[in-house]
Image 1 (cartoon, rainbow, N blue to C red):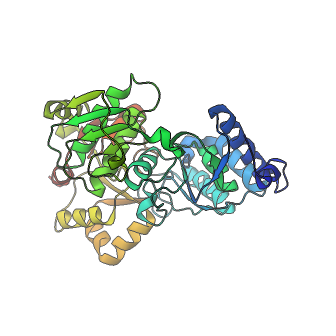
Image 2: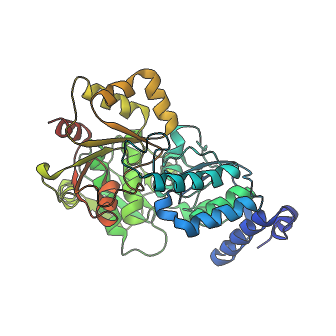
Image 3: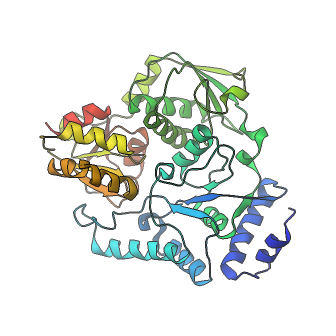
Length: 399
């Protein structure tokens, strides 16, 4: 790799041990992936924030980087933590876990990271523009940034994302390069998509098909007439979870699609395929559900408004988490939505979610509108799952 004098100085340790370690990580990645140079990034989003995932080993590394003088050089936010820092007790999180999670956040804050913890940073200010190079780690956010916003990022690991934050650069390889953003598979869609579970099922169906594909996995989707922000974040989460997809194009919808024609290799998806995918994500009967959750990925303000209107004058019958970022929750507070939702018995789980919180063993069956949440509820927490539409979930939770 050809490093600039500034990058060589970082590698030599002239800015301290943390920046040196960060540049060593990036230079090693660059050599592995054949990058010829570093490129500056404008923002970073770091995954691996929950103490449930990090443990003491991960926390020790973060503390070492903070003690070594590490300071972020660009705007940097975090993925969801393992708990709501203000509301963890009502969500059943132990004091021991809370103390360890606070230690994690303190280490990030010591390095200048903004400790707003969300998988949807593009909803509250970490919003890159078209063509901008960034270094993000959360899989659904990476997919959204690349596909929907037209920004450029690889799917970083926690250490490489932090390294990019501490240096302000990342190796120029993968989806930072135009030649790697070309579509590789045509998805011909003939099904009707209405709500988030439909888009989640589409992501699962495409992801399952891509399991046998090597090299770049960049679907080009035709046959979709419309998609909202909520629909697209659901699709991104599912494609990333089931297919490892970090970029896709939708004809007439995403910003780079017009640059390309559909690839020759075509895979057709019809209504029966989506119905089959939704059936595969449902293993629980209605009477078995003891946990309801909306917000995977984190909810936008419009979705919280929708929940408030649906819950007005009603009461939930089981544990019901509303997961979002703290800035979005603040807007919901001001609009009165929080009061309505909490009066109905639902709980806000802010800056955390049902995927990364330490809830294994607490529940038996999760109802959600998220295909990604179904995957992790089964794989990580061994819950049964029930995939429902947004409105049907709220209706079932209040019966």
